[in-house]
Image 1 (tube, helix red, strand yellow):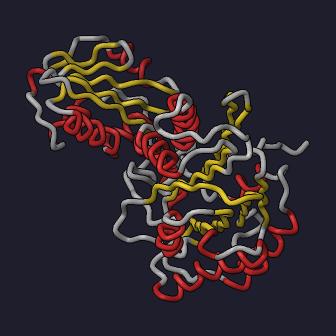
Image 2 (cartoon, helix red, strand yellow; image 1 turned 120 degrees about the vertical axis):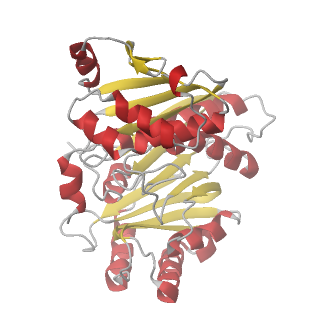
Amino acid sequence: MKKTLPLPKGFSAAGISAGIKKKKKDMALIVSDVPAESAAVFTTNQVKAAPVKWDIKVVENNGAQAIVMNSGNANACTGEQGMADAEAMAALTAGKLGIKPINVFVCSTGTIGKPLPMDKIAGGIELLFDDLSPENGMDAAEAMMTTDLVSKTVTAEIELDGKTARITGLAKGSGMIEPNMATMLAFILTDAAVEKHALQCALRVAADMSFNRITVDGDRSTNDSVICLANGKAGNEVISQNSKHWKLFVQTLERLLFELSMMIVKDGEGATRVITVRVKGAATNGEAEEAARAVANSMLNKTAWAGKRPNWGRIMDAIGYSYAQVQENKVDIDYNDVPAVRNGMTAGTPEEDLIAAVSKEAFTIHINLNLGSGSTVVYTCNCTEDYVRINAE
């Protein structure tokens, strides 16, 4: 039986194989029946793919109505032709809908530096419209995947003014994942009515609490995009930052994006463990962030976790070379609730207890720098031989 994904009112989707990838689905389309308010956050990489440059223009306008995407080719570092191809994807989609190209978001993900096969893209857009349906959300989610092992979707419903509004999220991401953001795409759809500025603020807050809290391998992509469309079909009073439903909407959005981000970490290329790195006692929140990211991105740590080795010396090393202030003799480290380090030296816990802690599929590393009130959290995964195999192709 085909898996389904409940889409909000007024949204349809499709996912098909256009031949960009061998056998697998590689193009997706999401359409709102009516113009929608839009918000987006994009990669902070200085090298941005052509579709990202196009989408920055789209989000500045009102009335976005569609997202068209392809996987298997990033359309990045492709020069003027790449921009022309991104605009052509928007124009071909817009033509089928009878709208302006500037109201169509375009997303691509895959290999950098290769021109898009526009003959396959054009044919794929025709196939997408043939398959467009409110029942085909899972097809779109599958078409987004690259090295992902599983599709990533979430949905929730909230009551607004006696109306039921739905929020649905689709995401892809497995490798090249580093905060601000990563090789990931996420499309957030809602039939709630939300004012445009409020929608952008809500998305930014939610992304900072989720997608910008994760790292798989420390690499930041050229194509990262999180796009949110709100078409108002639920019929609620328009949500603004001053409205009574603002807090509920933001909290729900945060929860859904966090669920999607953790699916990405769990599906990290070759990953077998999810690790939470919590730092407190830093001089500032920013310094806590520096220390946590140093630990989470350290390949020495990530490979130790793959081998079930509680090598806390590598954690001490990482926080020491971070930009955070560190006084060695004040540092405490725990694996879950098992003490590993006290005052910068071994806590004397039996090795087998530490091994048991880091052998779990998910565990938390607690680091206390004991210097101030700064704190943060970062979510990451281990690194196995499979990561090398996947990325050696």
